[in-house]
Every structure is written in C-alpha cells, then in structure tokens.
Image (cartoon, rainbow, N blue to C red; front, side, top):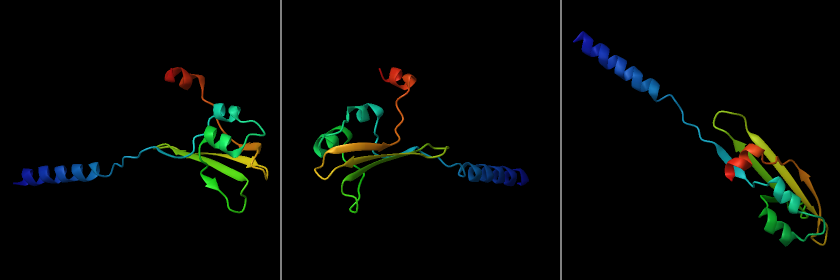
Length: 115
C-alpha cells in the first residue's frame, strides 16, 4: 500500500513538472524590406512604383501624409527582439525623394542555402 502511494506521488509530481515547460514560437510581424528591394528605388519614382516594389506600408501617418513607414520585428523563441524600420519620403507630387532606416542584407550563407 505504501509503495502504491509512493509510485502515485512520484507520477503526479512528474506529470505536474512536465506541464511547466512552455513551448515558445518565433514571431515575425510587419513588412520585410530587403536591401535588394531598396536598391531598386531611386528618386523621382511615383508612389505606385514604390508600392509595387516594397508592398503596402505598415503605417501611413495622417499627420505626415508624404511619409510611409515599413516596420518589421522578429522575436525568436528564446532571444531578444530584432526591430527594423524603413521610412520612405515623398514630395507633394508623390515622387520619391528619399529613404531612411535600417535594413540588413542577406548573408552569403543564407543566399547560398536558398539556391
């Protein structure tokens, strides 16, 4: 009888501790803007051409209508969050005048693995 209690207590503890482990997934949000896409942009392009290359912006600020924001965040399962932001600036005629922000290019190892 005593050994049955001990076995059931050990089983209960093992199952309880097993439920404590949490599975975390990597979370990717926003617009992925690569350095190759940014290289295709040049001053004087209209907004439709920029949208064709980069896609729709994540944010169009109503107070800054000539500024598009492309934001991206990546949260690996057990690591710190990586955040990137690219701002595309237009003049009053909706022609591209500049691009600001940070984008990391693809490393040679990643591009070779894709081929």
